[in-house]
Length: 117
Image: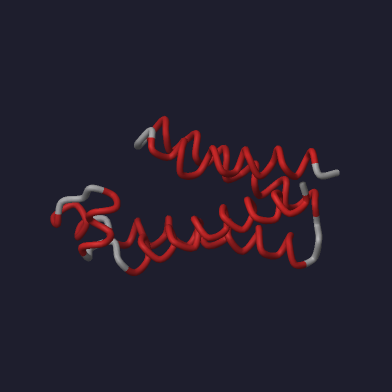
């Protein structure tokens, strides 16, 4: 189960690195507009806001990596819980897709982490 927990935690980390890249560097490019279903006008008007969101997603990814590298299980659980809550809020305020992209992988990683102990 430790392998499953590690794999799922790395998956959550990779998802957030991807979100960072799209929000910080590709928001008003075809990849960003397609990923988030944006109009060129909206993407242009919200570029700075999206970059800020991307930075926060990067912090979540960094927290997961830090916890994995230093084998800090409580810290990993905390950051995964933060990801799950962020996904719930994103689903409530933006798109239900956040439940599948953020919340579900984080909850699965948390469950695997819990059962690996």
